Length: 332
Ligand SMILES: C[S@@+](CC[C@H](N)C(=O)[O-])C[C@H]1O[C@@H](n2cnc3c(N)ncnc32)[C@H](O)[C@@H]1O
Image 1 (tube, rainbow, N blue to C red):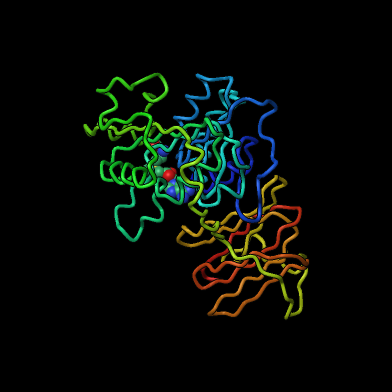
Image 2: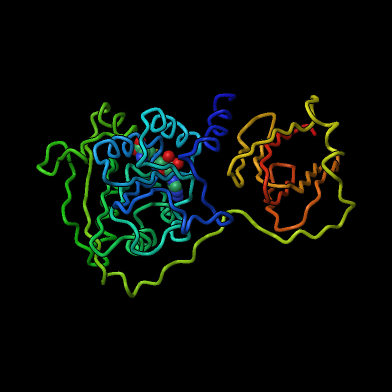
């Protein structure tokens, strides 16, 4: 557990890691000091695939995207150790990708072994459904390319059907990449998941798509979802200052605060048994309300707040300048 937490913290310390969400828009952010082509890997996991591509193509820039901070942190560490300047790691929901990149900005998109989401009701999460393909179409330059690899034949067939429904013909595809003539130096770099699938004797499906500027023009873009609620703070209790919280520090069953002066906005994890950890950048006004004890703790500051519910707790935070790691015991 500690290692997982440490990885998450490292993510926010590493200079090649960034977080993108509705509160932190990347648009205009310059990751690379050159105009080289940009390649995205979506759902990259540890991004060992992108790292190898980045090593092979020093004249291209790579952006590896996933929602899982600790997986990204693993890849980012390797890239830092190898002093790779042409790759960055971004925590982002692909659903929000159009918030963060300009239209026609990207040269190549790799979708590598996405979760197949076999249940019909989960179709909306498949990274090759029409909503996502439409997003990619807008992101890519007119001569941009999409590459897709999967071990999952159902997902591959689903994708081929979706493409056919909009008359988007794959430039090339195969149900068995490693036995086909389509194999090349890039598409034969195995991802972490791919190594497992190959060991299990599975065949790897692969397709390449040329962006087709006119095909999706009549299909409206779906609205970009918002994953955390941002509300206006309305003070309705006496507002406590940071000083009042000091006595709580480092005592069992109480809050622990650690400060981080890094460019981080907001993250949360709620996957721990005894504690919630909330990472918040900024002067914080934090109110934690346990249903049982009705304990309330507040920092003072005004601004927009992020409001989340973790189990029985309500946690609100606003973002300004500093970063705190707040460890919230469930037994508060
Ligand atoms: C099966 S793993 C594959 C990881 C890597 N591409 C590989 O082949 O080793 C799928 C990855 O996609 C990520 N993922 C799934 N849905 C996502 C989404 N909507 N936005 C960002 N990442 C997503 C998951 O967190 C996970 O790391």
